[in-house]
Length: 385
Image (tube, rainbow, N blue to C red):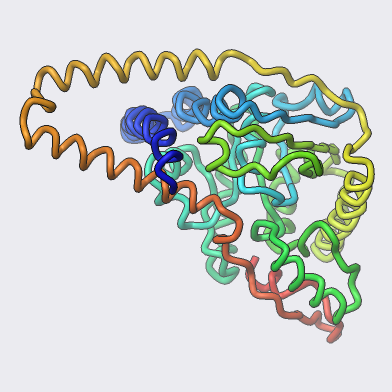
């Protein structure tokens, strides 16, 4: 991280990690004292508490970096967003796709109950990973033999969730890069399936499992396509912390869960067909620099700004009180302690930024799998998830 960037990131990191630890502490107390007696009460409280942390990242997108998110969706879908359970599938186009999802969830009133299927290592991220664990995110090891039962039990737990939630599933299994696209194209050309140009080949086992377990209580699938217009730089966490804006176009299509086919093989094919259609939609976007469909006004609510200002005031007052009480800046030990604390926060912010980078994400191994008839189907990604 450059020195200039560190100067910007450090105060934001101090605010995020200290307020985050407060949120984690409240979540832990509620988990220990409330959840054993009433899981629904815990979930309702946790939804509000988690938002106090997650809104800081929404503020980062909305107010600090000024990222412009354009949502293209029909009016009926837009009205239902946040009022129903939904399984969300999305192409993994940028490092902050999950944050774009959080912004849309916040606009829809369900930020605190927006969930995702993520790799296991995510839950060990200080503050944000812990908050996701308390919020019932599903963490997988990316090895299907281990993940199958974890995913099934996690989906079963969500069946009695008391508030509308979104569960995001990035079925490509990894973030998009040109190198990963090249591997996917090579595999597709050797197996006779449509060669992708803008997306990776979906891993369908997780999707099939999700559909089979969620049919009874989730009415819709939100098919989300994310694109970055040619005139805009690709958004990253580092750009956000530096206050550098970007433009993100989002296309959302709602599918009724009841309209999906019944058999697992047919559901898997539906997912693959959806990504072929998504690839064509991205071709159209690349040609026209827009999705062209109905554009919805999602605004920029002040709630995240108020939350960050409140945290900042509390933090400043708290830090001043601690400095005076312990005389941190009047002794060598106090100065050394403060310097070490700031260095630790800087390192943690660096870890968070690097963790989000697509170049550092681990691609799934691509190897053909065979059906019982010996015909090549799916990808080696399907073997894992």
